[in-house]
Length: 445
Ligand SMILES: Cc1ncc(COP(=O)(O)O)c(C=O)c1O
Image (cartoon, rainbow, N blue to C red; front, top):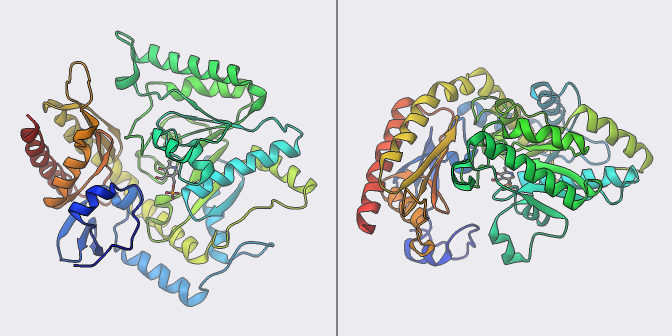
């Protein structure tokens, strides 16, 4: 067994890890990964939402080899750029909802969000709006882990770092099942969410707000699709106060919700899109800030007046990352993987919903190929389990024993299989999960 004692794992219960040990993975086939003892796991989480074309897609491996042989790496500072980066920027604008625009490359989703905040600050200062600095996101959202993107993330664990920074404000989370009042209809709930957002904007002073960032479906918050008409109701409010809408498509982008963009699924008209994860299907780090025409125009004006946009990452827009992204996007579009997500959705969501018959499953929710089961102590009152029971961890650990990787997120279990998954593999995933839940639930009864 490999000794992993020098690894500091992020987002890992380190006490628990002492008992169970880390899992060292070093081989993959399709949607399966293998550990160093040869044990096979169905990865129902596509790695971390990202490995959607299959871990070993031959075209991806070939694309990396070709690019390494051609030109192994270069930066994009001082007006230099590699060809794959140019082609990828063109491709991203072509498939984005924008008619024109610009793309800024980073190495991760966190860096892309961070970059976007700096871009908004840069623009506002150049336009003379020095007070327009505040960023609104939502409670329970996830936007990353750099100091700025952590501050955007609406999770309680950020207090471990003394975050968020001042000026990062969190609006209510549009999770109808959890946050609605008694007898409140979903429509009324969405109206209340929109009303509360507007009240927050007014309280903060609209002239101090630089942007509103939202995931079309909250992913790491536990797969929370917006309540009915939520985005239709909030967009006119943001427009009224001149607040740019930034769609954080790090999880939803490239097909996860059954359309290329989550923004398409939920009628969002963003000013900027944040992309990462599926962009290279997990084969290389890459993030992108895709800036629509309106913001691009403003940015160009501001940049003519400033000497430069003083920002960039050494490896941002790495040619191998960009070649892999071009290949991944080609596979997603031309191998009809989004069509596969759509055709699997009834089976995936139907199977998920069936878990609501189990004693401790409070809500099964999702869209496309992303879903979650939220466990509760009492289904009627929705009373959560005592957090010391670590229900999510218990289920995920038991599932691992049975050869299934699924992710615990607080009281929820998240499933987001790769886009190449077959109906038979969905059946296998659910039958292992059902057995797992039965065993865990029997133990706590
Ligand atoms: C919506 C969203 N934004 C940003 C990020 C941060 O991306 P990264 O982990 O690549 O920094 C994530 C990561 O899960 C995410 O889900």
